Each structure stands twice: as structure tokens, then as C-alpha cells.
Length: 350
Image (tube, rainbow, N blue to C red; front, side):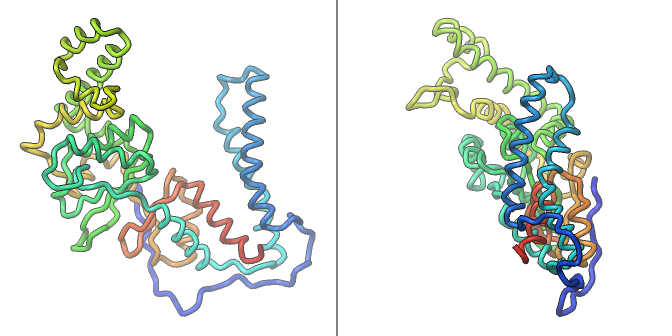
């Protein structure tokens, strides 16, 4: 589990700026301007990726590991931006303001804060799990979702299982961010994790949840097989699966087509019995369940400019979370952090 940054100090009325030197003291590393560099970077990324794909096919390298090559492609695509930054550092063509970089990153993270999930995946307290499946539809387009544990009575383990199972199967949302009431203050950042990792931990922590999940997956696979088997075989298989007379569940009207959330519909049915004695998730339970996969490191806005900026650029995680006085404010993919920093640096003289 990552350790959070907590280097705090009081800001003065102004922020330190790098001392500018007269321009023209050396050769231009990138003579085409910052705007051209910004526009060229994604073009280079696409062209180099396509070229590598074509080369792999032509040379029969389909089974070769591509990790280092792809990293090199990303670095090469960012080369124009890096040259702009280095050129300005050498020539003093513009002042680098850590405060401006911090503001740009904070604004970018806030714009991708994530979509809040209703308590226990249902819009209203006490609503059934049938409503939870409907609620999941609205989360498909989100990259990140926020699960607020509040005071520890807002979420149950089997309801979180339903959310994570859907996200892991569909590939979206990609990240689950946890917040909770801490020291009497709401919205405190508790950590983020991948839905597939959370799903596995929930199964590892409760054999009954694992059994319900595997049964639902097996039933869904059987229903899909029955769908492709014709009417008579389908009826027999549905009976063997214990789903006889449940066509309205698996093929809801008016279209009578397979439920788009078939797996989740069957999982909701399988875990419905846990509603009578649910396992609540408070902050200690969150850590007990998910410590191996939970990322708790965050960039705190009140940290000093130098330490904050170094932490932003040195963080190697897939995502970087942002906080303000401990409260969650947003999250960015790691690649977006570097891009936002570069854009903030080159924009003054663009």
C-alpha cells in the first residue's frame, strides 16, 4: 500500500519563479514553436504505433514482447514537447511557475473526478437489487466512479461485489475511488483500485460470495449457450439450470432479447439473500479487504510547490489521485499527469 505525501508548509503571497535569462543565448532545440510541438505529439504517437504494428507483422514478430518498444514510442512522441521545455530552460524563453503547474494539474484532475455511485448501487435506500442492475447502466461510460463509504453504514460487501463484477466484465469503469468520513469530515480520500482486483479480494474474503459469483457466471454461460441451441434444447437447458419460468428475467420485454446485463442480473438474484444480514464496509474493513490492491497515495494540494511537483512527476502509478486538505478532488491517468505538466510549462510562450 502506498504511503501518502504529507509535506505541508504555509504559502507566501507569491510563488517562486525560475530566473529568466536573455533569449538567443544558444541554438534552438525546437524552432517550430510550442503549439506545433503540442499538435505533433499525438500524430507521432499514432504514426509510430502503426509503423511498429506493420513491422511486427512483416517481420513475424507477433509473439515478441512489445513493452519496451511501446515505451520508446511514447517517449519519442513526447520528444518535441521535451525539446521545447529544454530549450526554454536553456534560453530562459519563459519562466517556469510551479504554482501554475499545480493549478493546471488540479484543474485537470477535478474535470475527471469520477461519477458518484448511489449507496449500495441503488438510487434509494432500501431499494432491491433489481434496481441496482438498472443503476449499473449509467456507469458504463465512466472512467472512474466514486464509492463513498460515508460513516461505514452506506455500503455492503455483496453490493460492492455487484458493482465490481459489472465493471470487470465490461471494462468500464476502469477505476473505483473510495472516500469516507474521516475525523468527522466527509469525503476523505481512502484509496483507489481496479474493479477486477476488488472483485478477486471480495471472493477471497468470503467463500459464500465466491460461490454466488461463480454460480451466476455459470448460469449466464448456460443461458448464452441455450440461446444459440434452438428453442427445444434451450428450454431443456434452462430447466436444468433452475431458470425455468424466468424468461422475463433473462429476456426482458418488450424486445425479448438477452438482458444486456445478464451476468449482473443473475448475480443480483444470487446475492439477494445477503440483504437480510449484510456485511457493512467501513474504513477498517476496507483496509482489511483490499490493502494488497488499494492505492492510498495522493497528491495533497497544500503540500509545498517543489515537493508537490516532484511527487507528481515521480509517481509511477497507473492513476494519480489528488486531495485538498485530505478530501478527494480528482484522479488522472499517469500519462495525463505528464502531459498536463508539459502543457502548463510550454503554454506561457506558446
